[in-house]
Length: 243
Length: 305
Image (cartoon, rainbow over all chains, first blue to last red; front, top):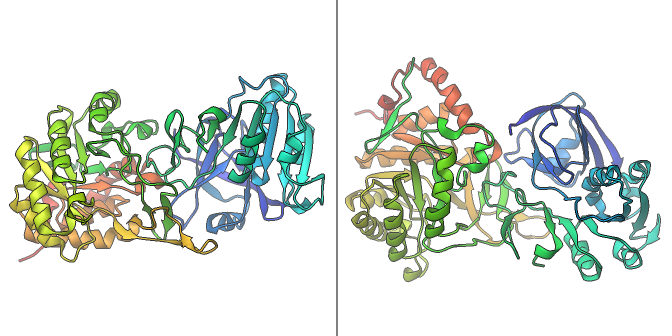
């Protein structure tokens, strides 16, 4: 592994406070959906971790929400800016146990890593259903891209401004699926865990120090021992999580 | 060709660059980035007698020119370290190591140090005395000369290898603590540990760290660390490992001029996993720039009369 220089190709608004960042550079260290990249920003000491939305031979795509100091700063950077990025971090989603019709559940920014997962599942001949929850229609991003991949997409909004009014779990309760994959806020995770009919995988967020397993800043207890979210995760299996 | 070799209590290091305990794990993650055999050595994750999970999360908060951590000495305990981590480290690091040890009573320090002292991979012991003493109302061993003396004396009695005491900067007079350790037989002094600090989340109006407070490290603490190394160097004869905010070759030279015989690099490893290699690679040119042929000769060079 090494820190690599990537160049910003695109950094544009995709929804309310949500930006699409296209970085061009060597993405060869990314090998699994659900991995993340961490970006060094001038003036900030720690790197910022971001879920990878997709990658190809010439670079990678990230979606981020400008909510804190780092992401606000990132949103101002022009095309052409060079950034030091560590890529291919963490253990991502395992598609082996998915079955034929897995359910992908994204809450808000959690839609991001599900995109490359969805692409991989379809390439493996599976028929994923994508269930995405947002606060309102102004917050929706990536839904068209999921449809273009060929997935069935169901949208939920808290205020009913698009799709089903209510939470993803309201819809999930009525669906049949072979397995599930999710990324989003922990409140949603707990609700999913209460009603899920199958095994599944959750991708966790954490305040990280290094992002590559050295500092023990993001350790959590699981049924399979202590795990570092950044190195042994961010994806954990339902059966190992202690809620 | 400049000479970067330094020595600590008779142990020759190829260069003075030592990743600091708690920022380098057991080195494995960094070995994925570069061949860590280029290091002088490294101080592996702080070990306690018994396994510790550490503090709840969040354990990390950013701050200007650095970060706070409240990891709380997560480690698998000394027996596991000896049975599993030391053999594992041998696979990707061929030099001797610094074993950093913490404890919550004199007995815990003594037991853990005695076990690690027997291991041939261990070059020296670095005893972290910033931990609260459970037998003394939680008062840190490192904040009182008498307690620092007692733990040093007790550890020295059971160790054949050099014993360095790692001091806390959260004291009124670090010099008196350093002297107490030297009087008790310490072979060297490591300083500084992190500075206690905190951050508050403005939205939640609560401390960011689950532990409320944490240790501040990073470039922001460098001048504080430098001052303390300078003061301690004037008061003790034993070698000093200087640390606190070092992130470039110039900082290494500055810390050695203040009195350090070698340096540890901490928080910088987390922001840039390649930083120690970069420092080692750039050190010869920086030495040449400042007219330094033998690095070991500059220790304490800023002191006059």
